[in-house]
Amino acid sequence: MSLLFACITVLFSIIGSAVGQSSYDCSEVADNFIPCVTYLVELESRPADRCCSGLQVLNQMVKINDKGPRNICQCIEDFAYTMNAPYVASRIQSLSRECHIHFSFPISIAMDCHR
Image 1 (cartoon, one colour):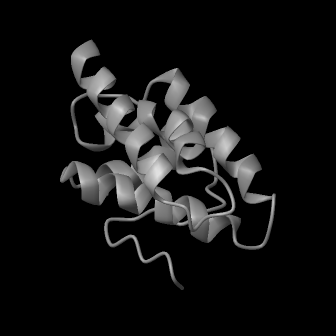
Image 2: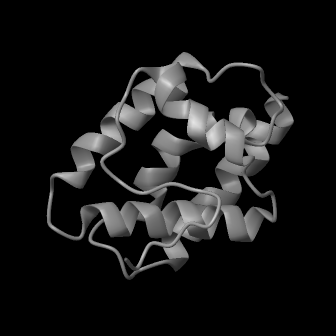
């Protein structure tokens, strides 16, 4: 499990440096979103505490500018695409309930960030 986490961390760091279209670095989004991936792809039965606290940080990042939700969504979409590990729809839906948080950015199986 720690090897998977390390690989995901390196991958997200590479993506973060390659994606320059957002107002903030995708690596910052990755640092906060990585702990959620194992839950979203059904490798863990519950989201880690670090996942839930990371989502709270992302919700705060959204408030930086009016494009915040779209930028965070785009980073998360890029992660899913690059990893070729689709998030499980039921896990995405249950994530806000499990973490007791309302998302201020879109996240779904379709990941339509340009709405």
